Length: 226
Image (cartoon, rainbow, N blue to C red; front, side, top):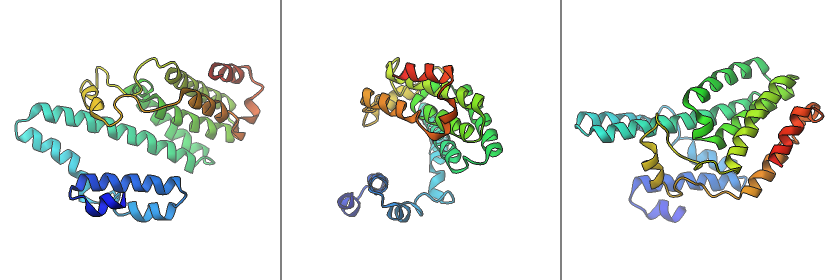
């Protein structure tokens, strides 16, 4: 990554290299290095963060309507995915503040249902449901925890059964498929299904679910994953 950053003259490639370098730092446990690398580039106040909508407006004003349509759809989708990832992290950060998290969960579930994210991105949606279950479990709300775990299990099982491509569009996002096919990994990120299954089963051993393990609903979910 350093070689690319220092020698490549294409800004977009260099920025991608910086992002990959930050991922590597996180995997190596070098969190301070990751922060130093990303803090300025990811500052929400930077003018460059508005480039996406300016490009869509430029397409529109130039009469390139089809490009504008595609770009707006893609950015709406990626912003939705980013929002869902951010809300999942929010639950992890505020897991002991039940009321704050409950309001968050309620709102995000509305977005998930409205945009059918369980089908569009089951992996990320499963993560959100899982952390919602942890929050409820940690705060003595077993029924709500079981409900969230049920949604988590549904998402994981749809991935394990390969019911559809992991990434895809739908009638609302009808311009996504062509863009997804151009991604480096296409519509199917590499995934060892047995590894994913074992991780999902292991996730149910979280201490937040200790009081749920004897419940028949919990045991049925465990059996579905196993």
